[in-house]
Length: 455
Image (tube, rainbow, N blue to C red):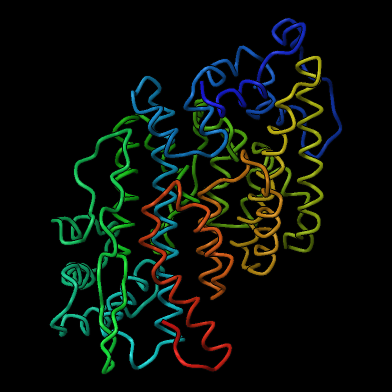
């Protein structure tokens, strides 16, 4: 039995007297959300040992609880729990979407604002893909320029053809055919095909020295994400709407929104140890990404997170300080309610309640971002990361990589590099996104001191 498995058992294990004998309905608790709403949350329901027994006894959930996503994917690969396996593939799909976004955000800054005459001519190709993934106009001119190069990447012709055909999402049909390096093959649930051999390209600078620049293919990261999404749909074909909801927060800016969602009754396999507390929260967050503030009022009677976030809004805006207070209050309310339900305090209560507080902060960040409160959303993001330090259960690799992509967008590579470095051990394919990020860091260093290029 692994150390991680023992850790989860120790956190979730029964105390003297056994929670099955002492479970009772929680008493009324004046808190940030109503008792009726809070009782639908997975942490409160998991105070009942009979509800959480499904998760205590499986090594896959033990690994997932400490955010060891690739190991959890492998553990669920036997397929005895299709929902769990589908969820692991969805989270891998979300991760690789954010890896693609990290790549293009870095590329736009290093080969856009900071571009130099000596840069390889093929960076036009990277800028074209960046504009597509970021939902910006003008991608076609970059692909046309790249097509004239003798060293044009083979995938350039496919992207140009898709652009000329009207740019209908998803572009997968135009991208099929194996023209992209490390493109994944047939879907095999329970596995991760990875990125293969890196670098994908070696470009040449336009200098007498003809120095080389190594690069990864952003399209391959996107295709890997779509591969995992297809795996999730294959193992849980009746969960397509749920998969849409779970991916909604992590799609690329260019991907069309799904609009308003109906509440899907989620199996606990979609919720346990996560940052979505109830079925209604999943629908709310999907809607909030598209609509922002109006979704809070719409969902506050059904969604725990919407109800909590409604307490953070002043004069039509999410107030970060209030969001931090509300999240702390929700965390304490969840702990009290779990203790009342179980009849005693247990070791796992603190970690579960901690996830609930972070869920409220993440929801507030989504609303603030959709409400064009870019600075306030950034403040919340940084607080979420700070509050996750030293807590394996809170260190969500998808959120961390999304934050790295956000830092790259802001041309702030050091924190992004730190997060990427911490994730590479689990996700070696992430190295494909590291090339432009490292180039951005070097160029920022050079521009800050006004010296010669650093190679």
